[in-house]
Image 1 (cartoon, rainbow, N blue to C red):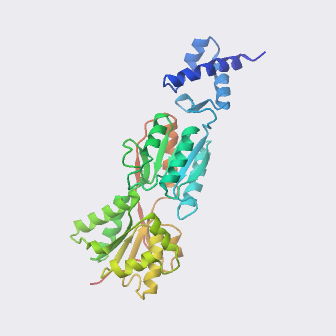
Image 2 (image 1 turned 180 degrees about the vertical axis):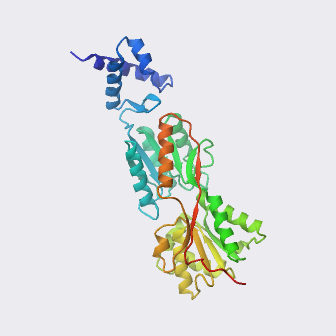
Image 3 (image 1 turned 90 degrees about the horizontal axis):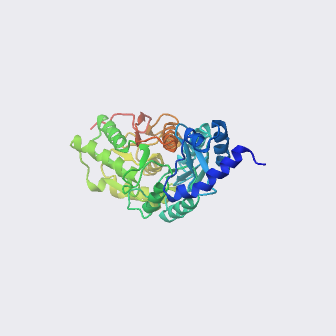
Length: 361
């Protein structure tokens, strides 16, 4: 004969479909279930634990039990959507995210979009069928109108906790995002160069992700405040596809175009990230231009490229684990039913040889 808690679990399970139809996803409290079924609190706890083991409900610490959106989902798994899983800063970020989630008792599954809207849509459609405990999402091409906003909205309606990394789509008005203070970073780097004596400062920015737009905004505001607005020709914009040309040997098409058309008489450059800065210094060296004596170079992320470069790169950085810790903590609070806000992480400047000397007119 089944134990009392098993009978109770079957009784609660039989009512889950009605809860879903009514749009109710949070179960009554343990006290309410104890009173309703006239059983002990211990029996209720065993029954709820059994339903959780079946993948039908999930416990959110401090908040109670919630019905899983789809049978077969795993409430202890987090789906991490990233643009590039194996390139640049992302392997380290994913490792850190995995460590923090493990502290909370969660595992993660990584989905890479390669910054493709089509790939992002396929991933989101799959997650809609079997949503897990939550999502950390780095959106694709966040500076552009995105046709996948409807799927993010459907996940939201299903009650799937979602936190965006680096940037969220503008059409998602209530999206919670953990990213960088990109405007502040652009302003900080440009002001740093101005204080070094530079008056003609070029820029290289990515056009299809919101980070590039925000960094450009900070760069332009710092120049405006110093009454040093650059010529339009001093700014190079590049896309995800053009980024791939950075890896086409030392003479990349993107860097050659910048040297020939955009650098002009500028004495410093603010780069979108360390990868761009690294390739730029290679191109400047081939062109017989001295860094930093003739052209200073600064960038974002403080990645391994900074030390890999033949001239170490001045770059903005965060405290170790800051992004992963903040993003995971925010998602876990959301899973537990708490109200969460977006965060923009402040930068620290790591000064190195690529910009150290002051520029004399």
